[in-house]
Structure formats: structure tokens, C-alpha cells
Image (tube, rainbow, N blue to C red; front, side):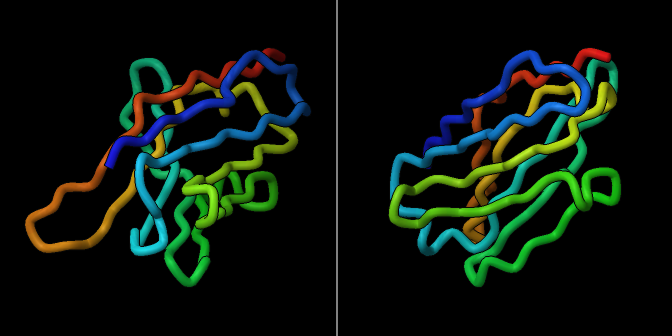
Length: 117
């Protein structure tokens, strides 16, 4: 599966962005999809996940501000980011995990989000 992330950019604090992650094939059977982020000099951290039943989880730092969704018909996952803060600045990566034995999770190429104060 190839994942193409897009939607990053420069935004002022308090603003919004929507990230998209489009897969090269159907995502209906991909068990868990998620967004991760990596700030300069820091490790890659989990931001949000969504499973096939559309159950979601969020990092504490983004709860109430970010929303993850998936559109199986468009093979696309989204991350709506509201009330952005400078500490949200990072490269955001999408991830798809089929949970199949012996199959590693797939990663997109990353999209840069910069939040100015």
C-alpha cells in the first residue's frame, strides 16, 4: 500500500488545517490507520488512530482539538486540526496497519505543519 499525505502548511496559532492521506488501494480492510508527528530533534509520536469500526483514539495533547476520520469510498483518511498551537509544529506522517502476520505497517512520506505564534 502506498500512502500519500497532503494538506500541511504554515498557519497562525489558533488556525486550522486538514491533512489527507490517500491510499493506493482500498482501505476498507485496513484495521488501523493513524497519524504520527515528529518535531525537529524529537521522536515520532502517535497523534491519533482510527480502526475499521471508526473507533478513535487521541494523544492527550490534541484531544478536543483534532479529529481523525476515514472515508473508505475515497480510500482516504483525514486529520482535522483546529486551534493549532506552535507546539503542534512537526512533520505529520500517516500510517496504515493491516495487522496481518508478517506485514509491516505502511507509512506515508510526511507533510510539514508549521504553526506560528
